[in-house]
Amino acid sequence: MILPWQTEQWARLLAATQANRLPHALLLSGIQGTGKRQFADALSQALLCQSAKVDGVSVCGRCHACKMAAGRVHPAIFWVEPEERGHAIKIDQIRAANEFVQQTALQGDRRVVIVNPADAMNRNAANALLKTLEEPASGALLLLVSSQRERLPATILSRCQLLHFPRPSLQVALQWMNDQAVTSMASALLLRLANGAPLAALALATDGSLAVRQNLYNGLAGLIQKKIDPIKLAFQFKEMPPLSFVDTMLSWLMDCLRVQLGGLPNEIVNHDFEAEIVRYAGLTQLADNVSHLTYLQQLRGQVVLGLNLNKQLLVENVLLRSGLV
Image (cartoon, rainbow, N blue to C red; front, side, top):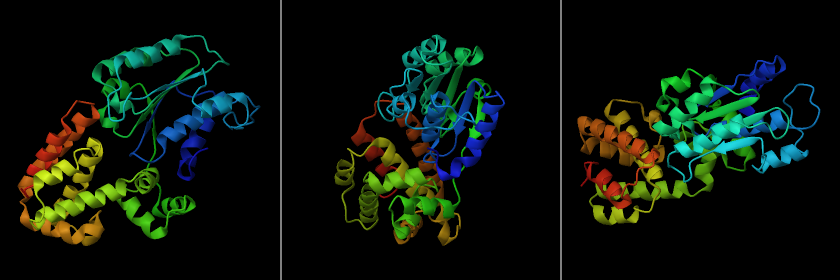
């Protein structure tokens, strides 16, 4: 149920459960792709499993409660997620979660609310959740999952117990990737691109992101060589998910800055495009790239908040600011 690198966090909650000291609110924090959502699902399933458990949190996986939890239809678990990927969690969703928390438990004494990603809550939604955090209901557990906890208000952070999920060691990550039938050579590149987060690396291998990245970087290489028209390139990538586009551009730009700041070659994340990145670094100015980095980070924040941005204009503006047009 849990991933190989999550045993320490699991043991910590096991001890808290056995001592009847499980907090009313947990913030599961760590970079994207370390399995925080899976851990939240496993914990909720364990707490509601109907089989007798010596340790208090084992999961049989066979009882009615386990099957309902696995199918996300358990009446004692309430999932709060953006209505669309990359959009904000709204106040009405949190109000529904608050009402759920106050209800009498439908099965047993526990009720679990999972907010994922918690940093996608808009300001009104976060304020609405605060009341429940300040006045926790008996038997209720709130699990906030976040890859960017710095985006959460301090009032939310101060009322949750932090459970951190660091990236696993390279050896553990590579072994897990191998168990998922990903070749060792591909795994090394994928983990590098995903900042060492195994689930994010696996997603790159299976959702077509790697091919899109390849095409986008080939396009940037074409711009460097003056072989591609920037407007045509923008049109080609206007249907790419905005968050994926911005993140892919950020990865390229960060590598360029590493080169310009005298970083070692092995520090370049996109090492399969090292020659193109080094050339780009030579054609652009450090100050301009720092300004572009700030712009991309702000743009990413707007995308995460779910602002309705024109996709083609977004791509065109990013390319225009690249210094290659």
